[in-house]
Amino acid sequence: MTTWFTADLHLGHNNIIKYCNRPFDDVEAMNDALISNWNEVVAAADTVWVVGDFALGQIAETLPIAAKLHGHKILVAGNHDRCWDGNGRRVEGWTKRYLDAGFDKIVQGQTTVNIDGTRVLVCHFPYRGDSHGRDRFAGHRPADKGAWLLHGHVHERWAQQGRMINVGVDLTDFRPISSSEIAELIQAGPAPD
Image 1 (cartoon, rainbow, N blue to C red):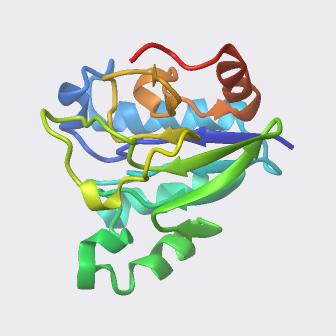
Image 2: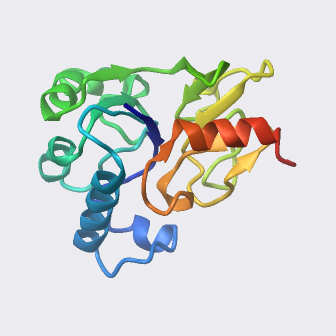
């Protein structure tokens, strides 16, 4: 059994193709590639941490894609996930819909995982940085106390800065990245900011 990490799939989100310069002709091709790439590496008994922003577009069509993806899926909710508690009262009922669609667990905020003996934070948001010009969602970001952090949210902006590792699909060949790949990055040490 392998543990995998991914973020920012934005399934069903047509505009993400141009925003992030994704190499797909349309949203159907993007969705098909993301599903195929995921299922090529993830086995049924594996665990995949989706670090936010799973599906957009017509949510009734895109959220059920979760059931087509191999493995046990844990969602660390991001700002574009309708079950994210940052959406306030609009979040009511969405957690159940995400679970019914195929997620095994929904995590709000941040959590920790152990990767090859290292305690690592997992949160959709990085300590600092954004996919836009300014840092949004300041109240939802983890405090930088020296821990490694797996995150999404910044899309193609960077793969790693310091101890922040971006697990978003835009920089991982549109597939999940394994915990052993993460362990190698941690062993190599912090990257320049």
